[in-house]
Length: 267
Image 1 (cartoon, rainbow, N blue to C red):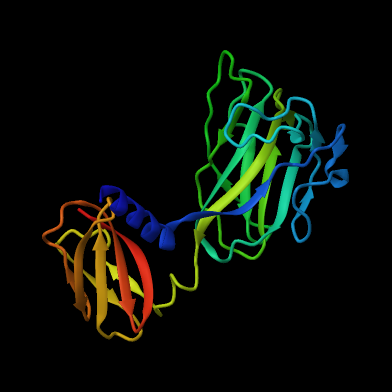
Image 2: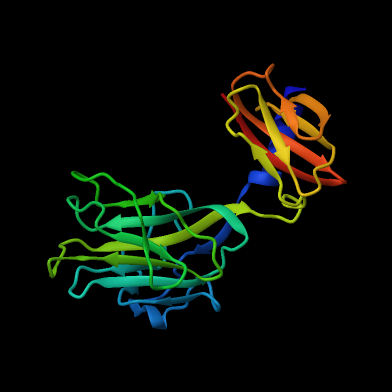
């Protein structure tokens, strides 16, 4: 029975919150060092690749889950700064967008100088942040998951830059591989109830409200982290959860045959 609850919870949670792959690029498999413009990447139009970095087969990616080996982008230490730019990624149907990529630094001393930025217009850029260890035996490949806001847009750009310091190139080169974006799909089913809002969330006073355009009676089912149904009721707006313990729950809302799920936090 416990297994059934876990599977039920997993299926409900996946409906409204699953992270799905939006974009993935392994940089192809060149046979020698080539310019970005001459490389055959995993993705094609409308995705485009450009920049002053190049694609190399030396020091292939390894040591992290999903490392593809073969080609990787080498962003060298030069003046002017070398760059690698990806354009044309459509993220409009996703929320909670996250990025990961393989990262290699050529010296133990170098750390986080490689900048990672995102843009929806190619003019205004938002930096993402990350950190990695320095010191002995840290000149290696690791998987980086930077933090920051990645916009939902029809043409997301991602730019990697090895910057200069007061016009002087840094002494460290970097490699980039296996760029991946994931996000929560805004599926039709999950957004079928027009203008659905659940508030306050987190819940602090033992109750929360549900509002929709229709504002009619709704069936509300709440599941705990084991997938066990702990509430099953019909309401117009307010749901009483004063008997539930603090924690994370999944709320399944049905109105006029339409269903949506939301995560609920009770404090």
